[in-house]
Picture 1 (cartoon, rainbow, N blue to C red):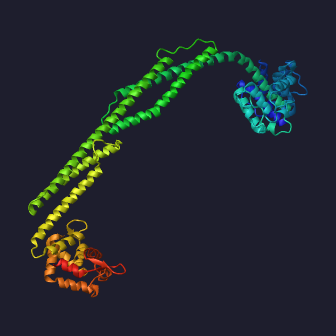
Picture 2: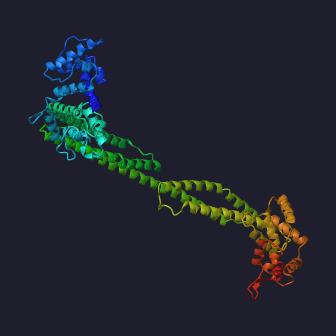
Picture 3: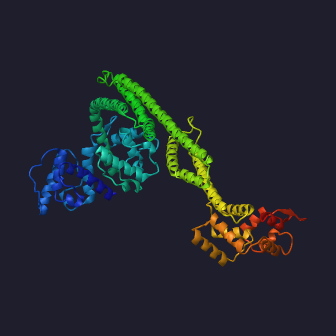
Length: 614
């Protein structure tokens, strides 16, 4: 208990010393032993001077004079000291020193406390009981155990200054936390120094009564001074806060109303000076910007307008509540001015929306017409070429020149189709899905151009082949027809030339089967002579072969060998003879056949050869 009292009383004395510019004490025994600090304390508490004294005593007699001067002052003030003399303080008798300080505490801190006729300790206890009575967890019966959980301290603070802590949310079982909170709040906001430690209350089986009473007395004086000062100042403070709040709200209203009106005006000016470039991209960008404005900026303004209106209403309500003069906003900032500006904004929005939509419609219509004009013109040019191609006549060489001249126009048509494609893409970007000005699409025209180009290629090939056929006087018409049909069949890519494999297959279809080495030699020789295996090269090759090696009888013997002396040949026979697949497919198409009892075709090669060599 003495250690708690020593700490508490030392802190209590330090509050007096520090308030008057003296350094704090750290030990009652040591710091009071020379009498200097005791004289300083008496001068502070008595608000008087004790005269001259030895401020730096070194000898015991000097210290005794100082202590005796202080004790004599205490006795002169009517404070009774029992069994304590200068030597007790000089020698550091802690128990007697604590008793003396407790007497000072009673005299200068507790004696003047009064509550309903009770004074000092009883009055302080009654005051604490009355202030904490509404708090059901608090039961103040003494200045010891009743304060050990911190709730009584928190209740005292909450009773006088509820804004400093929320009593209802306290964890009532957290003794240390509640005590620590009360100490902190009292020191920070009430000017009550922390004379005790948390452990002095929470960890002691019976907290020291004198220490607790000294600390609680600080609360009493703090709240008593506060009550007197606050009674006078709160009235002025409340009115000042009211007027400041109204002034702040007025300024806020005017600032926000002015800013809102300026923003509404600026966006309308921007719209009125906005111009379209005529492109769909620009129109859509302006449309997207306008939509974004409505979803963001406009909604912010709607909220701000409502908030400003509410703010003005709150200002007027507050003024009427306290009987103050009504607030009249400056010229141009009344709610009616805001309403007029808002209506102007709505009209400008409608005008802006109509302008954007009209521009988009106009651009789409222009894109439709532009595409239709290009597509229709392209179709007419294609049709004219088709008519011209179908009307080609005269000698073969003349037809050949006419068709090649027509073919030279294709690059120009391709360029025109590129312009059509770009126009169609512009329509796609602009979401133009329907077009009443044309029935064509770029894909349609591209397909038709491909057909025309294909027709020209075929026509040139046909004329070239006819010229070759005309010059082959040593072949019968049937042979020419057979050779030409064979060439066309194996010219799968319609280039009017045969590749190595196509050449091999075409010859095999005529019964002319060569080894890979031989067919490669033949093919390379044709490339060297003609540059490619054209129809002319193929015909000349067949003429050369048929004149030198092949007769109808030789072909018949060849087929008979493949058929195993049967009067017919089967697909299996031809495959076993290692004819190329394409040659087998061709012969299967051109040789007449009948099906046997199992449904397998039997090809009459003899009849076919008679027809070919008739």
